Length: 88
Image (tube, rainbow, N blue to C red):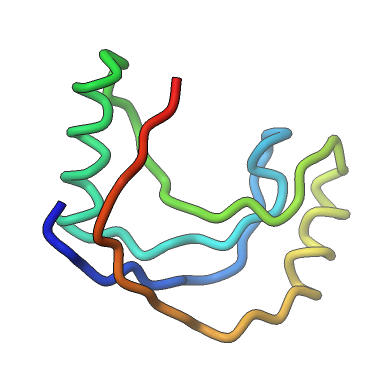
Protein backbone atom coordinates (compact mmCIF):
# COMPACT_ATOMS: atom_id res chain seq x y z
CA UNK A 1 0.00 0.00 0.00
CA UNK A 2 1.29 3.40 -0.91
CA UNK A 3 0.80 5.59 2.19
CA UNK A 4 -2.26 7.84 2.10
CA UNK A 5 -4.26 10.02 4.50
CA UNK A 6 -7.54 8.75 5.91
CA UNK A 7 -9.81 11.52 7.19
CA UNK A 8 -12.82 11.35 9.46
CA UNK A 9 -16.13 12.73 8.32
CA UNK A 10 -19.50 13.24 10.02
CA UNK A 11 -21.16 11.14 12.72
CA UNK A 12 -24.14 9.32 11.29
CA UNK A 13 -26.51 6.43 11.97
CA UNK A 14 -27.96 3.62 9.92
CA UNK A 15 -30.56 0.87 10.04
CA UNK A 16 -28.37 -2.15 10.79
CA UNK A 17 -27.16 -3.69 14.05
CA UNK A 18 -23.48 -3.25 13.13
CA UNK A 19 -23.85 0.25 11.67
CA UNK A 20 -26.03 1.58 14.45
CA UNK A 21 -24.11 4.83 15.11
CA UNK A 22 -20.93 5.45 13.17
CA UNK A 23 -18.28 7.94 12.21
CA UNK A 24 -17.92 8.06 8.45
CA UNK A 25 -14.48 8.08 6.87
CA UNK A 26 -13.87 10.23 3.82
CA UNK A 27 -13.72 8.11 0.68
CA UNK A 28 -10.65 8.53 -1.50
CA UNK A 29 -9.24 6.83 -4.57
CA UNK A 30 -6.57 5.19 -2.42
CA UNK A 31 -9.10 3.81 0.07
CA UNK A 32 -11.31 2.54 -2.74
CA UNK A 33 -8.31 0.80 -4.28
CA UNK A 34 -7.57 -0.91 -0.94
CA UNK A 35 -11.19 -2.08 -0.78
CA UNK A 36 -11.06 -3.53 -4.29
CA UNK A 37 -7.74 -5.27 -3.62
CA UNK A 38 -9.02 -6.74 -0.33
CA UNK A 39 -12.20 -7.95 -2.07
CA UNK A 40 -10.09 -9.65 -4.72
CA UNK A 41 -7.68 -11.27 -2.24
CA UNK A 42 -10.56 -12.48 -0.03
CA UNK A 43 -12.57 -13.55 -3.07
CA UNK A 44 -15.61 -11.58 -1.94
CA UNK A 45 -18.15 -9.82 -4.07
CA UNK A 46 -17.56 -6.10 -4.60
CA UNK A 47 -20.57 -4.15 -3.38
CA UNK A 48 -21.49 -0.77 -2.02
CA UNK A 49 -18.73 0.40 0.29
CA UNK A 50 -19.19 2.94 3.08
CA UNK A 51 -15.95 3.36 5.03
CA UNK A 52 -16.67 4.06 8.69
CA UNK A 53 -15.69 3.56 12.32
CA UNK A 54 -18.50 1.89 14.26
CA UNK A 55 -19.33 3.73 17.48
CA UNK A 56 -22.41 1.84 18.72
CA UNK A 57 -23.85 -1.59 17.95
CA UNK A 58 -27.35 -2.64 18.93
CA UNK A 59 -31.05 -2.82 18.23
CA UNK A 60 -31.87 0.80 19.05
CA UNK A 61 -34.82 2.58 17.51
CA UNK A 62 -34.10 5.06 14.76
CA UNK A 63 -34.94 7.95 17.10
CA UNK A 64 -32.49 6.59 19.70
CA UNK A 65 -29.79 6.27 17.05
CA UNK A 66 -30.38 9.82 15.88
CA UNK A 67 -30.28 11.10 19.47
CA UNK A 68 -26.99 9.28 20.15
CA UNK A 69 -25.45 10.47 16.88
CA UNK A 70 -26.43 14.06 17.63
CA UNK A 71 -24.87 13.81 21.12
CA UNK A 72 -21.50 12.49 19.91
CA UNK A 73 -18.82 15.17 19.62
CA UNK A 74 -15.65 14.08 17.87
CA UNK A 75 -13.00 16.45 16.61
CA UNK A 76 -12.10 15.85 12.95
CA UNK A 77 -8.94 13.79 12.58
CA UNK A 78 -6.77 12.13 10.00
CA UNK A 79 -3.98 9.60 10.01
CA UNK A 80 -1.62 7.92 7.59
CA UNK A 81 -2.52 4.46 6.33
CA UNK A 82 0.63 2.60 5.31
CA UNK A 83 -0.49 -1.02 5.59
CA UNK A 84 -3.60 -3.14 5.55
CA UNK A 85 -4.02 -6.39 7.51
CA UNK A 86 -6.57 -9.00 6.39
CA UNK A 87 -7.75 -11.73 8.76
CA UNK A 88 -9.82 -14.80 8.06
